[in-house]
Image (cartoon, rainbow, N blue to C red; front, side):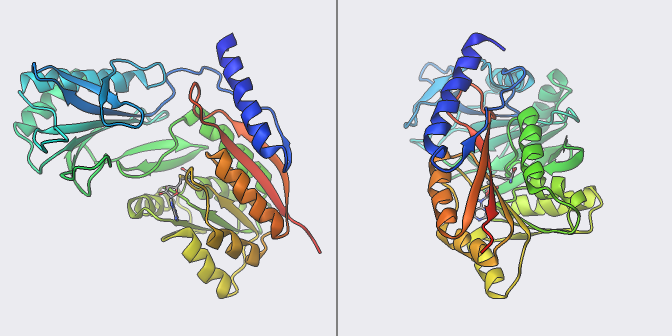
Length: 366
Ligand code: SAH
């Protein structure tokens, strides 16, 4: 681990301590063993200029200007190589990059997802219209150069928005999804579902979160903001039951498949807003012993936190990628009778400004 990397960890540690120290002790941040090429999800915007050059890049911060990028030290190296090949092939197939101003052109985005353990690779090509000229020749050419690709999906996004993916999808090659193994469990990942970008650090993060829950096999566990079900499924061997809720229906479908893949009978997932769902369950008198929550960067909702506190689980394990919203939500839990026990930062996004934290909260006994 280089000096610069350890300095970046120190910086992150200070940032978390400033926000979370008022609530509890903050453990030393867990860094990566090898902080490069860790991103298993790589996104490139396809752009071009008047001279007919085509390039892959990223949006400039806060704008829609595309900055060309060939290689990134954080990305999976195979993913960057595949993106370069797609751009090269676009030239020989005379494909034009999509232009957001005119709504014309063909290819908008390239998304690559790589599975760390199984080695499977999914390429999602986001196009402006539901047509793919010379489809089979293009797929043949791409997979000939990259036989490691296991599936190719076409996603149609005709809207002029900054949202990357559209609704409609068609599998062009392979099974349409990839599978990976995390904490010994198998997971199906489809193009639209959320999956943690850093495999090594995710396992560390989940082990801490599950360790905080200290399950004995008798607990009814809730997994809120469950994505494709990873936390709940990884915790399920030591729980009586696991119930998960997630807004994204594609992710819920994956989560249900993942229960079957791992032959689990004590786990179920539902689609819905976490706050609405918890409010209903709390009103019906349902109780959980442990609640895992892993909301997006903006944090959880008042509705969700109030309903959880009404159910009074003995432990809440809060996983957060937004330290500011975490501090705000911890304040709410504190007011409602929870003790903030400890916080463990994990460096999931090395070299970026982001930090992931796991926080243990316990119910104060009256
Ligand atoms: N626990 C999962 C996913 C965490 S990412 C994992 O570790 O992989 C956060 C998830 O919250 C995303 O899947 C997102 O779709 C979902 N989400 C966002 N807002 C939500 C809401 N209001 N209710 C339920 N889920 C929501």
